[in-house]
Image 1 (tube, rainbow, N blue to C red):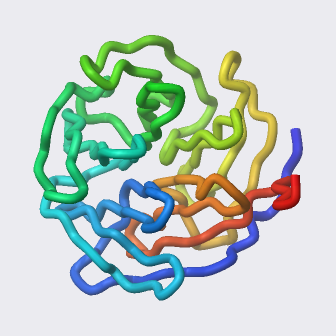
Image 2 (cartoon, rainbow, N blue to C red):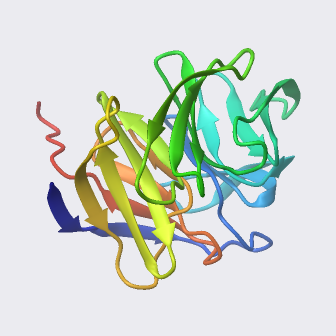
Length: 215
């Protein structure tokens, strides 16, 4: 297994009125983050919040190319980001014990934090398709270039790790600097992870290792 220290590229926030950062996702232009009562769109260039949607947002956030998905206690809401309206709702697999959320391969991937699992679920029904076991508390979840990454946060220790999507074996870890935890996690599809910072109220950009912009 490869181990390295996470390289922090940039910090955003804290933001007025946003005491926590829970889920994080990226729509190709804005970084969306959940603060408990709203989902906010952050311009990663300027660092400014450009839009907010009032919706319960207690954990992970995802984007499927058209809609946002947001965990609200024991439910997952599908949201039109243009209007802010909830267009569908499905049950969350952890029944309130859910954490990260990601979209990949036509499915939602849901972290179940204290159960140390990641579930692949049907986005229409919430039915569990398969489950990946982890050996640490699971926070944020993201897929990029066929790689499954998730955040962990136990006590004062937090990291971002790449795991084998079939076996759950840990292949690579990026250890966060002291005092920095990972709540939400999302890749920008290139050389960066966006990480929710929990109670710090911050979003951090972390370098994705091994990314070659010229490949």
